[in-house]
Amino acid sequence: MMASGQSREELDARARQGETVVPGGTGGKSLEAQEHLAEGRSRGGQRRREQLGTEGYQEIGSRGGQTRKEQMGAQGYHEMSKKGGLSTTDKSGAERAAE
Image (cartoon, rainbow, N blue to C red; front, top):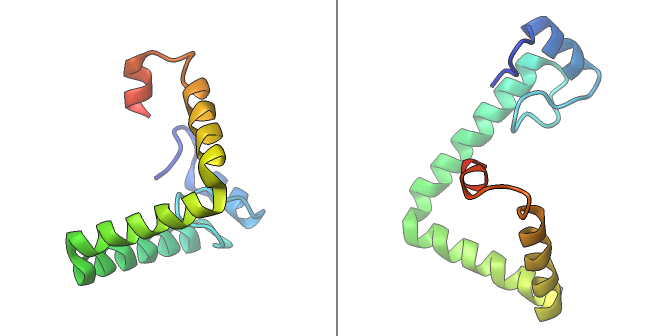
């Protein structure tokens, strides 16, 4: 996914300086490497979803949420929800939905 107005050469130069210019391309040392990494990670997630099925994926998400809840505690969850609400108070419902 290319940012508007930027050529592949510009993006490649930024990638070679260590910047992630492709979502999911973390660790790639060039634009092409980042594109390949992002594609491979996407395929890996799709394959895992096929192996587990919908219920298996839901169970993993639930377990992750439980673990995070135990780490943060009830107060930590409360603070996180307040921060999330505060970050959207200056946006309209349509703007929040678009994000």
